Length: 271
Image (cartoon, rainbow, N blue to C red; front, side, top):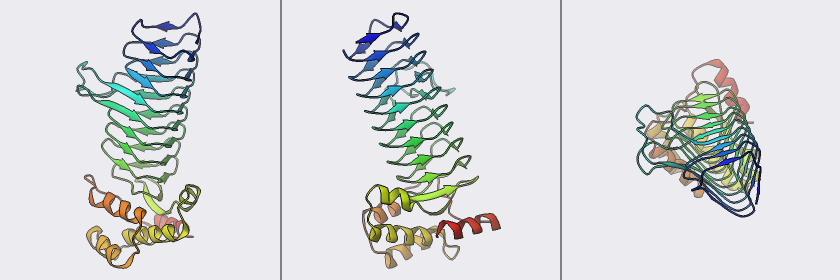
């Protein structure tokens, strides 16, 4: 174990033998740090479990009180998975509500100044680019990519393997497997490169692309689009997940293009 002499560590913290802790790090109450974790200078951690092999860069803040006026000091926490990288000045708040946790999956990258609010659930292999921000209770699916300075309203869902352009904003759910951008963030096509990199075969990609185009079509409302997908699109696990995501949306999904800019982007997205 390599702990800098200037680090301040609570007596109750549980720290594996091979953890590295840099100068002026503060580790408060309720912390468990597993094997192979590296913590950079001036990071602050409390009420959090940090999974094996995770790297925490200087000035990151993990487990601080939620920015929730309803929080009354109840016992909550943060769970971070294995082999994540939490970059400089990133913030991950602990949950609100007795016994609840904010969760980050395995192999996630949270770039500088990104923010994960209370009670969020972030899946495995998610990337937050610089200053990407999610509000409380947001759920982010496996392999999603959130562009720099993008912002997301509390209680929404971001579907798996979706990619959202920088400086976008969303207050409704973002469907899986799409490329999305704008304010609001609208789907402009299939995240074909992302799906291909993750081993999704062309037949499956084409079926998902067809389903997304039907959902976006101004010819149908969402209920009608789902019926057309059921009748005309070959089913696979990705199409099924997409349909289920839309059916179970509580806040709704943004699908329509309302001006010339987005119509132009739609054409580019399908190339």
